[in-house]
Amino acid sequence: MYIRLMKTNKASSPASSAAIAPETLSLDNQLCFALYSTSLTMSKVYKPLLNKLGVTYSQYVVLLALWEKDNVMVSELGDRVYLDSGTLTPLLKRLEVLGLIRRNRATDDERRVLVNLTDKGRELRNQTQEVTNGIHGAVQCSADEAKTLTRRLQKLRGALSKSILK
Image 1 (spheres, rainbow, N blue to C red):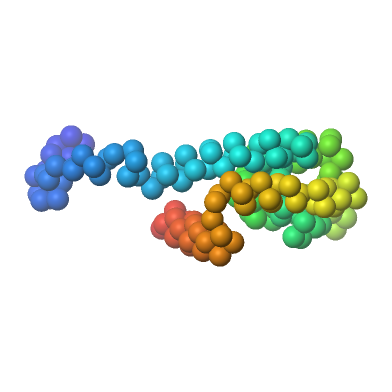
Image 2 (cartoon, rainbow, N blue to C red):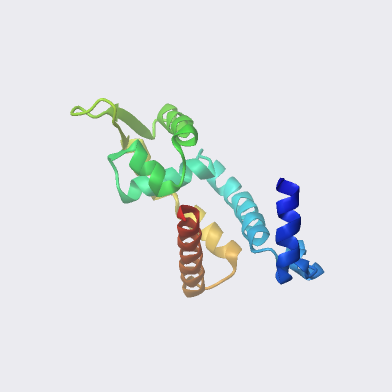
């Protein structure tokens, strides 16, 4: 029955009978691949810079969020950095072993876990200038161009998030 429905739909839809232009499926024409490969390359640029700080890129992202707002619930932190609890929890455990954060149960509701920077975690922020300089040098664009690109990617992320909810 499924196959018959597919044949019926295919015959009745003029768009489905048109051949897909080869360039449409070219890897280099895919926005998803451009984003994916750029993300991988960006991670490779970050790796040696963050190795000097003793953290991974994912740990660095969490620290950036905590430097903006400390003493947050794990769920709020996960939302902020786009990580689910299955990924975030082991990452937080590693940051805790490094002495950069503390996790404590909320006194009013033991189901909630709060994340706090330690003094060592706050001090690490002062050592990030080399990371910032290294990334600025690698992207080879002005600060204004970087801000524009960041805003456009955030807009794209928002549009994609809305499409998931439909």
